[in-house]
Amino acid sequence: MTITTKFPKGLSIGGKKGGDTDISGVVAFARASFDPTSSSQIELFTLPKGAIPMYAISYGGATGGSSPTVDVGTTGDDDGIANELDADGNAMAVTGALLNTQITADTTYYGKVGASAATGGTTSVAIAYVMADV
Image (cartoon, rainbow, N blue to C red; front, top):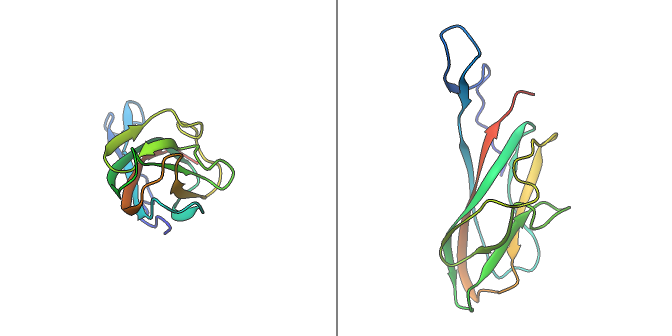
C-alpha cells in the first residue's frame, strides 16, 4: 500500500508566526498487518521520498511458537527497520540500521518471520516517521 495523504504546503506544529524557526514536524505512522510465519518478504507499505523512519512498533497478534519474532525492512536490508521484533506482544524497535536516515526515493517496506517463528496469527506493526523537506 502506498501512503497517499498529501499536504502541499507541508504540515508542522509550533514555530513563530510567519517564520520557519522552532517548527516541529508531525510524526506519522504507516501501519500494516502480515503473516508472521512467512519466510518470504510480504509488502507492507511504501514511504515517500523525504521520510525519516524513527522507530517500529509491534502490536502483537502472532500465535504459537516460543517467543516469536518478525523482521521489518527493505529488499536490500530485510531487518533494517526492526530485527527480531516481538510478534506476539507489544514491543518497540529503535536501533535498526535504516532508522533515523532520510530516504532519498519512495521506499517499500516488507515484513517476514524472524529467527523464532510463530505458528499462526497476524502480526500488526507500525513505523513512526517524520517528513523532511525535499
